[in-house]
Every structure is written in structure tokens, then in C-alpha cells.
Image 1 (spheres, helix red, strand yellow):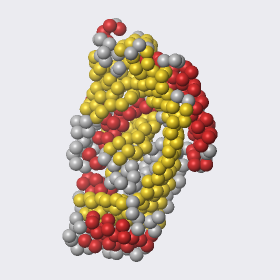
Image 2: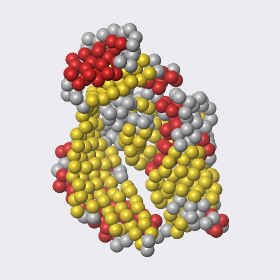
Image 3: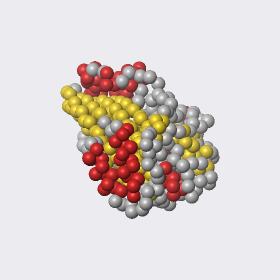
Image 4: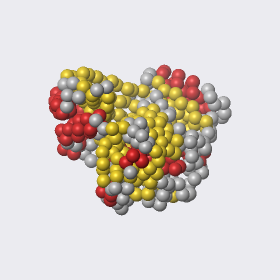
Length: 469
């Protein structure tokens, strides 16, 4: 454990040759994974991650290093190596004590997952696994799993402040494969929360989730190929928000904006979306997967307004990139672990609810695609160009859902899709995932109500959409 006296010595040592800010980040993380494959326990594993990261800043220069040797000798070696990058006189006075910063704990009390017997978790996984496999003999593989991750962090900085934080995540997942006459279909569902055991036993109905998982898997296995062309696409709530997250959210992070590498650099207070689009990044939602009491610089997290009625209102800013932008950090600095330099990242990012019901959006669509969920994609951060594969999609004709289709891909640009959102539903929901970027893989929520994009390019091998007219 890194104590305050040693942290003080390392911070002062780091400041000797001219950096204007020094920060020590101590982490202690425990991970446990339990998985069941085709009814049998496949894996029970644990890991411990512990170490310290040291960040030194001077103007627009950032130097970072880390070590799992938290002895005085190990940390002195790290500090001496890093400070060699600077050759100026001391800019900050020595610190002699730290002021502990207390933050409001907005999470609701819950039962720690670490107190739950492994056999209880295994039984839950086996039952869900059996439900999926019993649904159809076309389901050839089913893996159910449960992840527990707890992290304790302490931050010390040269502003003579220290911050403590504790997070506990739980995630249940089902991953299955179905096969029929040479066709292969896969599906993944993975709800997660910081809501403890109560979330998985009271809020989430795992039996129903398993049944729905199997039903949708076989439905898409038997679906015909999706047609291609440019036409309206209804994007489902919850996990449908991954498009906004990937294509637009990353473009609003200061790590790109501050360097002019985002399509939204210099666009503050300018119109970038349809009037019906308002969007937030909110790290303060109690017990939500992507929430944090403080970010990895020690700042309290906020509900940050990104877009209001189509106007760009804000970015996600960490202190270092904020130097380039002449703007303060707003609680959006995150990292995977002490091995990564922290930077601006999303937390729970979503399009706010609108005035339409999902049924009204479908009813007002003459011919198009209803994309309910997605199974991955790619984005070019410099241009905002993206493509996403749909894991569940349906043809909509004359205001009604006609039939399922498989193999649909949505292709577009961030700057275009926001302007083409013409209907926003009132059924906001969230989906949990892990977002990978410069500071590693972190838990995030993507979210939105059902929305309609009045025109977007859809790729598929099922011929032209005209066949449905």
C-alpha cells in the first residue's frame, strides 16, 4: 500500500526539475471470472492488479510511467527516470501534507458480490445455460459467465490533494452459436451494473433474458439476407446507442478535439444535429455500469451536456487536454489501470428521450429497416466514417414490422447521421459494454431511446429494397 509520507517524498522529488504538476495514482484491483460452457463449469479464475502510475506535466508536455514495485526504492527510480525529461528550475514549492478531498457517494447501498458464494453463481449460470440449449438443437454452443471486478484507488497530486475511490462491477453474459445447413449465427448479451447482487436477482430476470437470447438467436439464423440501398433506418433503444457512442461520442473527447483531430473541433455552439437531438454524458447515475464518484484525476463526475436541440454545447475534457483548449476538466478523465495515462473518456453517454413512442416511429415509416441491436463495427476517428453490423434487424413496411433479416450493415459519417435523425422516441434505455481507446478498456454505458434516421446507407446481400415495394 502506498502511504502518504512516501507519496509526499515522490511528489517532491518529481517536482525538482521543472514540471508544473505531478500526480501519483495507486490502484489495487481484484478480478474474478466464472464461466459455464454447454452445462459444465469451464473456468473459475482470479487475478490481482496492483501498482502505481506517475504522471508529470509541464505546459503541453506529458510524461508518464508506472511500476508494480511500490517500495520507496522502486518509486524513487520511477520518479528519477521521468523527471529526466525536464531540465528547468523548480516551478512549484514543496508540499508537506495532503488535504483529503471527500466526495458525495450517490450510489445506492447494495450487497457486495464478493460476499456471494461461488456455488450460488455457478447454479445461476448453469440454469441460464440449460434454458438456452433447451430452446433448440440448432444451438451448438452456449457460454454463460459472471465477472466480478473491484478497484480501490488513491490519487496524490502536487496541489497537495488526495482522493480515494472504490468501485465494484458485476456482469452476467450469455454468448451462443447456432448452426443450420452451413449457416452460422452468433449472439451476445451482457448486462452489467454496480448495483450488487440485488441487480442480478431482483432487477434483472435472468431466466427471461436466457429465453429471449435463444429465441432471437434462432430467429436471426433463419432470417433471409438484408437488402441494400439508401433508406430510412429505425435504431432500437439501449444498445442501439453504440452508434452515437462510437461515431459521435469519441469525436467529442478532448483528446481528439484539442488537437484538431475531431470533425467537431471548433464547432462549439454550432449546429451539428437535427433539432430533435439532445445528448448527455452522465457519470452520476447511481449504480450504473459507466458511473464514477470521481474521475481518475480526482474530479467529481458530472452530467455533461453535449448537444442541445442540435447545437454542440460541450466536450468531454481532462485537465491536460484542457490546457490546449483553455478549458477546465469536467470529470471525464479515465483509464483502464495504473498502466495507462488517463485522458478524456465517456461514461454513460446517451441521446435524451423525445416525444414519440416506438410504435409511432414504426407506424410513420413506409419502407425501411428496424435495427434493434449491433454486433460490432469500426470508426475512423479523423473523419467520423463508420460501419456497424446489425445482430438483429427487421424490414418495416407500411408502418408494420414485416420480417427479420440478417447480415445488415449501416455505413455513414458522424456529421451526417446526426442531421438525419428525424424522430426520437420516449423509451430511453442503456446497454453495457467496454470501450477501448488510448487509455485502455473501460466500462461504459451506451444509450438512447428508439430513433429514426431518415436516410442512411445499408449494406446487405439480399438484393434491393425495391423488392419490398
